[in-house]
Length: 68
Image (tube, rainbow, N blue to C red; front, side, top):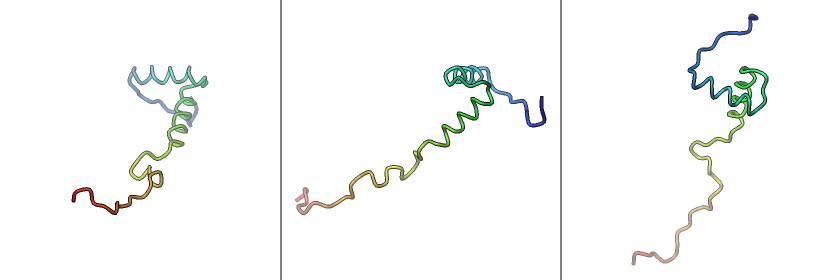
């Protein structure tokens, strides 16, 4: 192992999922698979608070109150 490599402990279920992604994405190693996964997550749009800002029309009150 070279100096820039390390060992990472993961559950067998996690390893199986990584192996599935490796096959699906045709990556050459688990490191490449993890790097690709990180890239995909970082490119995702922000799904948090305010993510729909600007996609809805601004609220406007009706002239006639419905509860008269």
